[in-house]
Image (cartoon, rainbow, N blue to C red):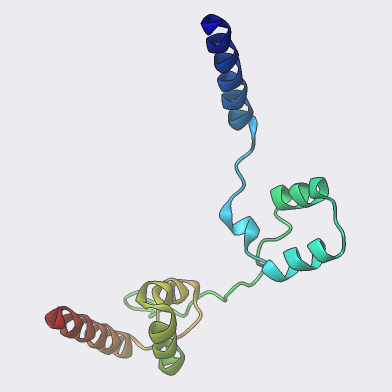
Length: 131
């Protein structure tokens, strides 16, 4: 009796491991376009068709930013829109704003960028001093 349960659990475990190993890994960016996912779900798309669309990348965001402006001498990214940059740092955080800088969303001059980095450092130092 005990051997039968052991063999049954071993077979089920092997089956589950093989099933998980054979399933394709879908990247997280394929889930990014929530509006299109919602539209397709509400239109009555089948689960099989939804999975196929998801695996093919239909729901990826197509929003792209232009190539960032670079300083010809140093090759560093130039950011000109400091107001938008500051708002994004405040709302989304420095890491996300830095990612958008790399994508070319803003264009600050190198001097403004250095001032902004100094301001952020001072804010963090002030916050850590309060702890």
